[in-house]
Length: 120
Ligand SMILES: [Zn+2]
Image (cartoon, rainbow, N blue to C red; front, side, top):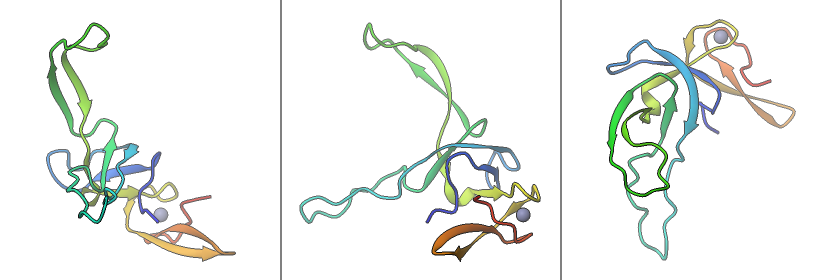
């Protein structure tokens, strides 16, 4: 089970955007499936999250086809590694580590700081 999910609020704990908070817009999947016994390809998007307002990069997009909607300089959020963000607990509002507890066979995430259940 992932510690960070889409829709969570996270705080950046390393790098240029240190201290910024934002909502998780996308969680990149952890691995590529191996095919025909070949080892899994290296995936640079492994264990990364896209957080709104964090790590905004500019891309110079030249017109490639008629159907392309955006050209020129495009700003968008680049994926950052999941270890560089920390979950912000909805109950106590602080960045926290995540624990797990099992209630009635269902697994819930737990705030290590205040002990509140994060998933309802
Ligand atoms: Zn908490």
